[in-house]
Structures are given as structure tokens and as C-alpha cells.
Image (tube, rainbow, N blue to C red; front, side, top):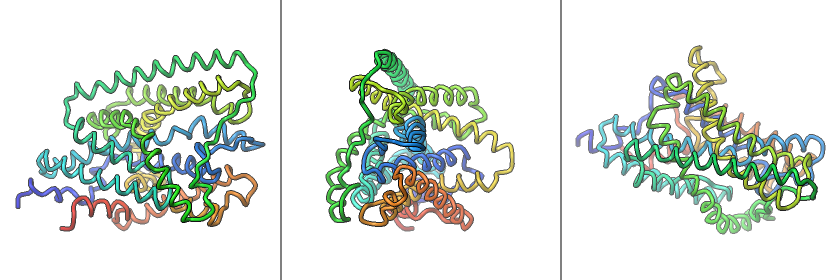
Length: 399
């Protein structure tokens, strides 16, 4: 059997020297944002997971969550997923796999990711993104991955239209705020599986919730596509060569995400009074602007990676990158933690310390730190994450 006909030659661990720091740091950091968002949702049994009548520190917490976290974490996940598709395809080709073989590897991997998503959503957490990304990955592999640079540049024009959309909605929001008055608030959409009285009922609820949730995530293909565009240019693998682009992207992306989320953040903190019409516009602006946090946060981490790479990699950076090399295991570990710590039929810690949202925030940080520590331990022993190991085994089979 020749090397070219066997895709399994590219399945082994990539040496640390061959890995870029920025993509791993981005994946590790994004898991903290995801932890904060999901823990709040589970504790408050709703989406996006907001205390409707905040008091004291909860006001500040709501303000920070809507400005920097809610609808601003998963775009990073989507961007890095697209980036990873190109990285995996390149690794297959570098190992001698023919283009058709490399594509077949990606197709199998994404098909199994859909299965992972179904299992994750059924057993642990309704708000699964793995299945949707698996579907998007299949589409990207079949339709876009091998297209020319000219085709991939089209995604930049699409994002330019998104900028115009956000600006128009932003103007409407400002005009609505200037009208003043009203008593509208931020709705916390009730999620049945998060408030279920026992595990069997939650499981049945999740079976009905997952398809609808997955459908809402599929438009993220435009964020994934931007990630593939960035990966084709090795922007995060070679950040020192793209400093100007990274600086503009970090400032512009995060600037749009923060400014667009601020009205909703002020409303959620009880610091702004508007009517229902204005609140609806704010919600649209908060959602539309959130996607810009994906490239914004990724670019910021790329800039951090440039500074870190000029020094000896420290234990903190090394541990964060170790988690970034095991994002699937880190993500699933969080869902297990929320089920054990926050579900109403288990420990229900969110109800025992006064403020569910603040308790969830503390638990989110602790769970994320635990995953960082475990990932660092696995890294030192040269072991991949258990979920990554299983996905690789299903994708490539046994030797």
C-alpha cells in the first residue's frame, strides 16, 4: 500500500514545533467564554441566561455578559472550526494523501461530528453546536474547500454587507433610545430541558429541542467560511506577517461587537428604559453585531501570540494552548459539569447561594480552570483528549 492511498498516515500527533500558538490559544480561550454563557443559561433555565430583575452585582454581571460574552463566544468557535478544516486538509496533503482521500477524511470526520452532536444534545445539553458544525463542515468540504482564492474572497464582500446592516440597525436603535420611556426588559427564553424535574424528562425535552437549535446555528457557515479564508492565508499560524490586518480586525471586530451589544447590556442591567419596539431593535443589533466578536477575539489572540512567541512559553500560555489542542474534550467536559453542578435534579448549586447568575459565573471559571489543568497534564504525558482520540479512531479506524 502506498503512502498516498492511506490517509491514516496523517493521523498521528503533530509535533509541537509544527503547531502554531495562536490557533491553540484561541480555542483554549474561547472555551472560557462558552463556559460563562452556557453556565448562566443552565443556572437560569433559559436562553441567553439572564437575570430578568438584577440587583447589586448582578447588574454589572449582566452588563459584562451582554457586552463581551452572550452571542460573542460561539462566533469564535465557528471561526476556529473553519480554520481547523483547512489545517486538517493541509496535514493530509502534507502526509502524501491525494486530494480525494483528504476530502474523504474530512467528510468522515464531519459526519461523525454530527453523531457526536446528537449524542451530546441528547445526553447532556440541548444547546449543542457540534452537530451544526458537522453539517457545515460537510457543506464546506463538498462545495467550498478547494475553490480558488477568488471564490473565497467573496466572503469578505458578504461581511462588508453585514457591517452595513449593523450600522443601519444601530442608527435605528439610537433613534429609538432618544424617544425614551417604556418598561421593556430582556427576555430569558424558557428552555424545558434546563428546568426539567428529572433526567428522563430532560432527555426527552432535549430530543425535541436539538433539531430546532441546530437549525438556528447553520447560518454560522458564513463565519466558518471566513475562518477558511483566514486559514488559507495562515493568518493565525504566521501572525507576525499579518500584524496590520490583525490590529485592524481586533479593533474593528471587537469595536462593533461591544458597541452593538452595549444597548442590550444596559437594558439587561436595568440602566436603560425603552419600549418594546426599541427593545426588539436592540435585540437585533445585539445578535447581528455578535458575529464580529469571532474575528475580533481571534485577531486579538493572534496579537497576544506574537508577543508571547518572542519569549519563552510560560506555564500559563502552555496550559491554555494545551486545552486549545483538546477543544472537543474541553467542551464536552463542561456539559458534564453543568449537568452535575447546576441541573435542578442534581446538585442545583445555582439555587443555593443567593444569585444563580453569579454562582454560575464562579463555577464556569472553576470548571474551565480544571479543564486547563487536566489538558496540561495530558499534554505533558503526550496524550490527546479522550473525545479527540475517539473521533480520530472513528475517522481513521485502527491501524
